[in-house]
Image (cartoon, rainbow, N blue to C red; front, side):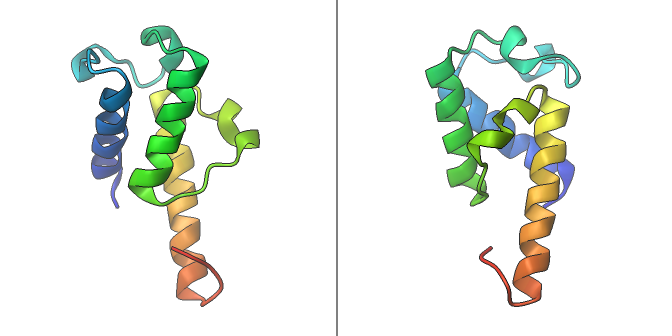
Length: 94
């Protein structure tokens, strides 16, 4: 999945939690939770939504890395490419 498609999935997942989110108002390099009023339950639901949408495991220890839209996209790209690589080698789940 390319970065543009991945961004679309991330924003669609975010809108399920915060329907008022306007893509044009988000800055990719700013703290996401400061741009959007998400409490800890909303944030957890967003992470779960990403897991369900993309079939990627996001360990709780990694949550602190997911601070901006860019950071989320970088993290997911790395996780998805790692999952594809492991699957191609016959050593992991997609």
